Length: 230
Image (cartoon, rainbow, N blue to C red; front, side, top):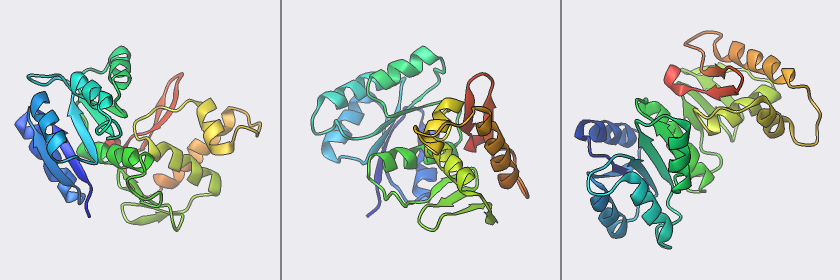
């Protein structure tokens, strides 16, 4: 049975774009136009995940998220917050309200789909072997194979693990220290510049025959997988 996504968005054109793209990815969808309608929809037909706009009529997305986290029957439903607010303190407010992830407008539907799959995977609503997809890249976690735009990409084990970490949270910036811990492990000493070496190798493999660079470098911060750059 398909997983069900509740889209809470008062801008009708954007809501329909999201519906079209999510249904194209085989999700079932429902749309609520304001916060109060969202709470009614949640009580009537519980979804597997909510895509929730911050700025809504009647009741804000923050208030909807806080209400969900107070109700035992709704508390475990993952929430991805959509907002035009891109400042760090706004992201923190959204996450503090109980959102599982946060994406600032404008964004690509492909990036949102990748974020949805990542959140559903962490919530154990889809298999740990569900392929990771984004920016034309597909990771088959069961067969340990990677394709970009249909072309197989040959990766060494370390580059494979590095790509997997980055694709599990598309758009999230990981510091070199975080990548060392997640890819190499806490008990292994590796110099920070080793991360840069493997990022270069990963980029070379992914970009060998097609497309833009999907690995974004954030100066003084680290690296992120950016499917919107496809």
